[in-house]
Picture 1 (spheres, rainbow, N blue to C red):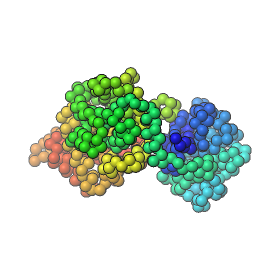
Picture 2: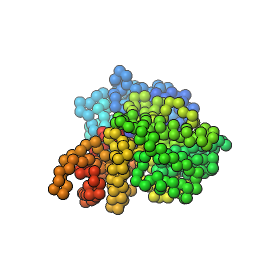
Picture 3: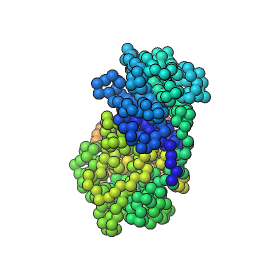
Picture 4: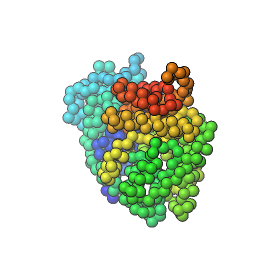
Length: 516
């Protein structure tokens, strides 16, 4: 099995940490996120070719400021410190860092003073994205200034001999001009990495790993019909063939007519073993009276696994359960040991935090370390239809977390009809592939309206549409007014229970994409 070069991102709690790893992977070099306090032995064990230190919310002079294993500085492994990472490098190696009177935030013209290594091939100036209150005021011995701005004298620093570099700005965000080129220069020029991490190589390695893990045993896959679980299904089928059985549990929270579409696709097109379980009555019963979002997710996650276990018993001994968990799911759920110890749990993802503590399955998660766009690329490589590949993300708990408040069959039926209108109109207008997600949320709010000269007191629908590249950050989509008008008109005219439609114009952060 071919071994890939590895760049590790040590996470100091920055909101952009995942984005750094993603940018490295765009260079066709494998990258993973590890906690900031990962010891040198672990990095050597992994044969790391380079380290990137993320930014972070704190100051290097705070009492409990996160610190690096000090032996890493002398390890000879190339290091790039970003924002907090650069300040930590300066402080630990004998330089000075001081707080500024005014915080520098936003775009800033960057003047490049040294065009070798980190800034090779770039022009004299570029637009950078700053976000800091502290600045490096004295360089460590052996370092030189590589770039500056009007307000930040040391916007980039480096020691060519030690292969240690730092940038005060954020090259990983799209707001920094040629930011990806800077990361490429670190990966290729400084670390001497080879671009061998491709979709084809991932598929080959994943198939080998699945075969080695599963052996001759059988494996179950929880199928949703989305791009993630579909890609996992095809990947597993390539690896172990008929040892795979896909179980599609219809919890009652699917989109309109979706269950039939999924069954047809897997039995007629993919010809993969599929068991369809209609468990809607049981799920609705479990969620009766439940309104707390976290409790909803845990209830659905637990019931999902219990239902699987019941199906597995009918099929005989099946020790393995596959899931379509993604890297952002793992990070946002702040699973211990995956990210910075200071990471806060935003919400529990269905495939991660919703699992019961005691399970009778061993988990197989072949795309656990992938981003959504990487999963789509792998799906295309394996010949999955574009209609499935480009399908917008759909949450594991389904429409249950798009119904604020109690989930009932009547409320699900309302949202299914509304969701069908939203998706069809967004597609008809040519915006489906342009936005990350577009969906409706049923609110627990009734408002007064007038229909046919009569007073009404009916439900409210919120429309949510966002643009994003990886779901870690997202901006509300500027859908045309004509499209919004058409969606609103159809919802109110075709859904008797609705008399008001609102549009969500909040971004992530501070909001999340889903409402629950």
